[in-house]
Image (cartoon, rainbow, N blue to C red; front, side, top):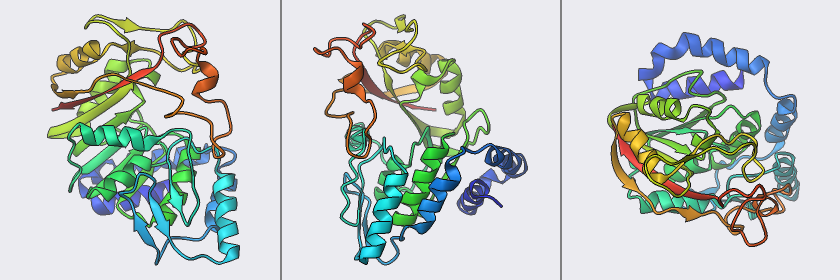
Length: 319
């Protein structure tokens, strides 16, 4: 059994309703494992060498999830080395054993916006689509979630997730290195899609897939880039958007809500559009590559390509 299959087995122990997916998904995860990133084994070696968080004080409600545990000098060095091997850290922040792991994104700001939307995470089974390294899953566990499942095809994020799971001793969460195209898991109370929609060539297909993951009465959260306009406004860049080459459709908030309603979902909440700034997404010692500042014009009124500056909304809809 490989590590991806082990995550699936851990998930089945908490959500037996998914047992009907077992055979095909075991096969798919084995296929994906055979095609894993060439650096994954090196990342995994670093995770294996680092200390765990057993016996430490863990606080998942902090903006930067904390682990307070006394380590020997050797253990502290091993932890620092492992976390540096796993760079770049795009999602966070985290605070394990006195380390200020300041990620590219202030994901705690996004999580605060989820809380402002009035979402209740208590005792929920939650699916995080495009979960990254699991920051939001850890935070939701801190708010009383009973099970968090993340799907994301990135093997780099999977390695970071395994490190965080080892540090924060989180047993009620699982990461599957795949997409909803590979397995349309369902019967969740809440499904999140945070910063995924504009990367999908068929946004309505993505929204329909999110809907199908829900039980009757379940909620879904779509956090995405938007532009100004009415329910018929959708912007598609010619090539790149803020340096990103995999951006397809940026709807207006009204158009996004219209799409969701066409899919027989009820809009419960739509936030104001929030501009993305260099305070929320930026280079740090833990993410030393190009970030937002390098892809915006000096006055931040447009991207380097001349497109509308990035701003985001959160929409909550129910099935």
